[in-house]
Image 1 (cartoon, rainbow, N blue to C red):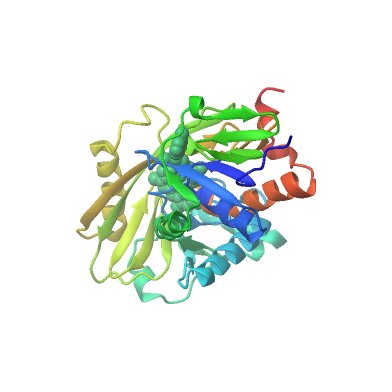
Image 2 (image 1 turned 90 degrees about the vertical axis):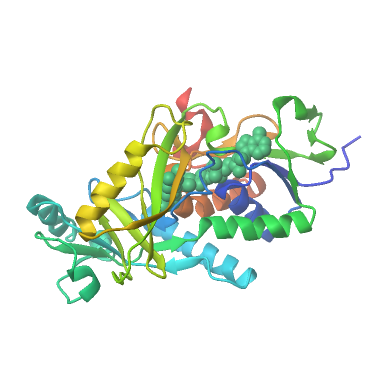
Length: 345
Ligand SMILES: Cc1cc2nc3c(=O)[nH]c(=O)nc-3n(C[C@H](O)[C@H](O)[C@H](O)COP(=O)(O)OP(=O)(O)OC[C@H]3O[C@@H](n4cnc5c(N)ncnc54)[C@H](O)[C@@H]3O)c2cc1C
């Protein structure tokens, strides 16, 4: 006799992955229940929320940049309408070239038709930007944005708890019971369980990368664009900026460090050439993957993984959720680049 399921999908984890997936499933008419406990070091709580389609290390487009950007923009705008707020804030990013060589690479890249739509050199007067040191000039990436991830997660969580769709508890392996046709966890049953445990999961190819950042007040700087010069500065209003982030692969659960704080402040003070007031020092662990692609798809008959969002979770999550649903419910082939078994086969 088939199990009379209470839900269509059970999710473990309400970070960005679990939240975006759960919203996507509900939009498709699925009954969803989420189990989550806020563990220290979770990534989404501290994500700066910056969306940037260009990898600044090499000035190249990120993976499927244009498609991801279009899907993410539509997703977060719609979600804002649903919650009667704004989550998606278009914010151009000014890149201050550190060397003449970097400026030259930028000019070269602008000859590529796809890059041309995203990058430009900026010689216009901008009193706020002009006060920052930039002997080699600056470029602008217009189609950047930032998403207030912690606000989005808080709104989703409050609504899901009120609707009985989110239970606050930590799930251990012993809580997961296999049924002949699905999964049972604490009285909830479904034909599918999706693991969205972020950096706390153990999965082939998953790599934990620690990140730290600061929230600072800098009176009278009046930047309206985000700025990148070694570190990024993201204006979030009222003279307040988010500054980050560091990357560390060792000792990832050790919490905020004095070393990272000093590194970020040193970079920042050289950039703005004035005193800054530190309001907050944040730290979390990114769930990255060995090949920098998400980890998505079935890992058992009734179990699925949605992880590996790395340092670009905001722009990746809506595409991943959409692609995973297309695969699970409409039979669409999973993109080879995201398959969870790619690290073992
Ligand atoms: C310092 C920093 C800055 C960042 N800046 C940006 C940025 O500017 N732009 C960007 O796109 N990305 C950024 N990121 C990356 C982004 O935060 C991640 O890609 C994304 O948040 C990952 O989401 P997740 O849901 O996979 O993991 P998490 O956010 O860690 O969520 C996992 C959730 O599952 C819960 N959980 C885990 N196991 C269990 C269990 N057994 N039972 C119950 N609950 C469980 C955890 O408590 C947590 O709530 C940044 C990350 C860091 C650390």
